[in-house]
Image 1 (cartoon, helix red, strand yellow):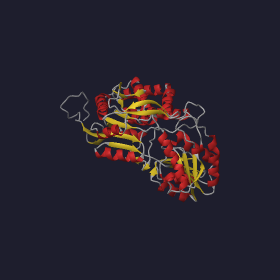
Image 2 (cartoon, helix red, strand yellow; image 1 turned 90 degrees about the horizontal axis):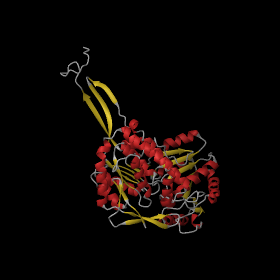
Image 3 (tube, helix red, strand yellow; image 1 turned 120 degrees about the horizontal axis):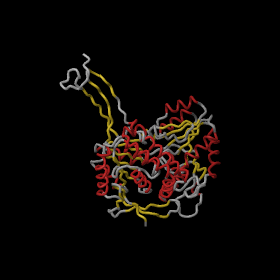
Image 4 (cartoon, one colour; image 1 turned 60 degrees about the vertical axis):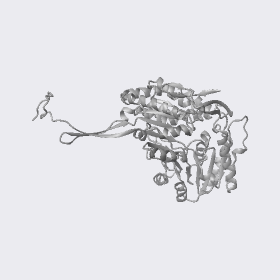
Length: 495
């Protein structure tokens, strides 16, 4: 059985804990590798390597850091097919989804490569007689990145690119379900010129996370995952003085007003709900159908679902792949039975779709007449299940969206510019789409939600990422007046 090792100080570090986790091919259900789970001592070794590399990397010129990132960007572009293949192999994404993930990750590297501009401070000359004041931003030291299974390349790049651009060293703990992409990224960064030890990868489960949270040399923690874990990481990390950004779960709503383009809204709902098998925190999981458009919208979505091509990532025609594990597939399927029992209408039942082999596949599902008390509405399902909630008016639709405890993203479909402008002002979430179902910001803005979707006050990547991975410092300086200095500086005396 192939083993996936830790990557520390520029070298593979075989696991010594004796604990390993299975890595499956979700399309076949066959275990293809096992990944070492780090002990506390192995995490300490990775942190020590980062500490050792951090001082010299902090002192590296901004141009040097930018050069490394530009070279890394070129490697990613040249090898994007290899990275996408690694994602498909362990996560199960179809080629289009894997390629899209790589492209969005590259955008973040391109942003971070502008670090000489991003770290510019302010300067005020002559605030008082002979006194100047200026601001600078400095790296934190060693930071930890804890990333989820659903974007095994993109989310590490959200964190790592900005962190190293700002002069930090990083210990990355990727998901144990699809860990290989992170090791590839670490190798390619060093190939691009990053000194060994600036980026280290340790694999594992809660034991590795616990040690990173308690380690005194870790200054900050970035996390993306479920809300319960995000809340715990935020509370534990901040309790010991660490800076923490912890992005949690979501229940993203798409409000469709009666004047919306029906075909555009139905197409958007299908792509946003079922892309990546619904395993993304920006997936649309609830459509709020307003007024008379409800029946027509449900019919239009249902008519499109038999055309969704489901299959393994190695099939170029596949539009949706498997779920990450058999256990998760079965959990997602369980919500359909619960919805029926609670009075919802299962319009399209993905459980009836049959697939060859033992892969972790589930068909797409559409559930109508959902209410806010049902588990299919309350919980973050993280699978190919789309719920439809009916609303009589725009105010009722807005109340539904704002009453949900999650606040990651929301979208509105309408031809009315006034209604769209009102929605973007009134909705309580961090990212808003207007006739755009998945409003993930471009790399030069920042990604993050409100309410139970974010713990901490800093969004991830973009400008907020630069601020998260640096500390601000203000310097007030006074220098002798050349006219009165005891040292002859060779300046002409003007008074």
